[in-house]
Length: 316
Image (cartoon, rainbow, N blue to C red; front, side):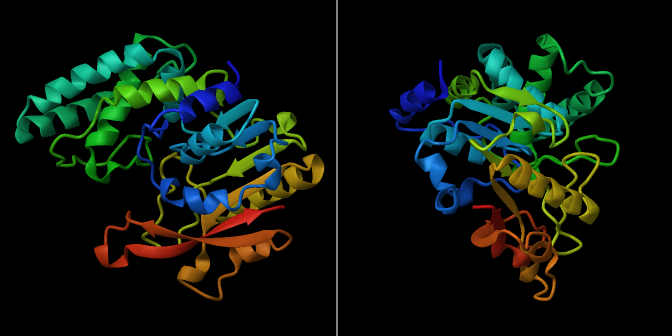
């Protein structure tokens, strides 16, 4: 089934496939603003390949693939467990649903004290599994691991994915009344959307030789923190510092100049904190720098949550 056929079928439904995980820096709230910034070639059906180099929760992917006609889709993220989740939903959604429904039933039948014990037991099992885990071959263990990932994402505090320097998931328990751990309807829709999609876990240049002048590339790296306490780059152990941002800007230039691809990149706006900080304005001075408005709720200090601007950099 082609992406166009999937798109048309899904659009007839009252609800669309949506991200199955809550992810720090997710783009759901920005989708309407982003739509105004997509290349005209995408809207005219002249783009036949779509790439995401830092997939995360995938809100932009789900929006684009269900609204526009795309022939081939390539998705990458450095987080192996995240890509494992997408692959399991792509290839065995019903097996995952069975695991999740059992977890959900057990959780709903437990009181708050028992729920907390269940959460920390599953979190520990999830972290222990990571050692020598086989990410290449899907198995019952893969189903279990992805069900654990979704469970802790839905039941942890603020629904974040965060790991420590060792790579262990370390977000504490969240006290939600009846979180939707098993969203069967959405998992099946996501699985349908993912058919024929190429999923890879690795560096952001994984698809370099596949990108051409009929490609639309969306780049959403870990954001440069606008203050010392706002960094959520630890979803992957490696982090993402200023040198990494500089190297990424060079890769952006490479894709633009050597392949003539249409490229859109998101990042934080240093001007929210320091008007003289022109880090991105300098790096991307040859391109169009747009601003969008976002409400960011991940700051532990409630007084610092609210509307800020973010940058969207395009080469068209």
